[in-house]
Length: 109
Length: 112
Image 1: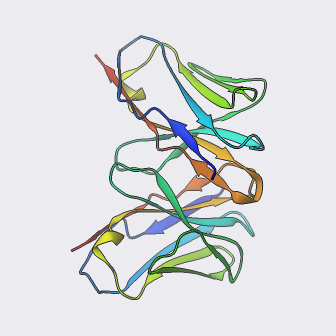
Image 2: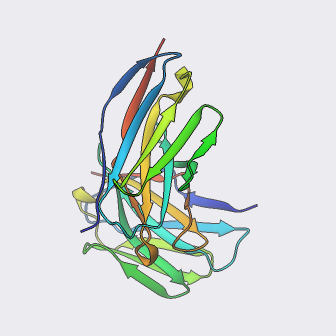
């Protein structure tokens, strides 16, 4: 049974702080990895892909650790607008996307 | 650019009534199409996926069905809704199985 596990949180973080959370996956054959962001009562939106070499997009950095089977998301200089649920997504070939249940992040002023 | 349209945005239906949710994709051909459901406070559950016209794979047994009458059209249906069918239904598309998916705005269904 394929599993993608995330700490549901909530993570309560002051504005301007750095926050990081991980996601573990059970299938070592997993091929592609993504982070999605979902705002309350909205659809998930792609935040960034996660490459073996890591991926940085502005304040966001994603890392992949294949040996330990986890991916991470780091947010620097957090903004109030970063408050959302962050979904980890793992692709295992023809089985398609498997979503974690998400980590709820709350940035406090 | 590719766009995905899903409607309606919200729906309140009585128990036992039929359901039809429609999703269309523009700007791409032969996409993989998906129906997900997200119950309150829970993760995304894959209900159906399709790799081509008339090709539907079901991930979980339920009283829902899906159809793909055209390349870029995906329909979710039920003959008789149950209370447990309430949730947030999301249509998504991708170029293949190893690529990211893009979601429609979702339909919030409440069965009463």
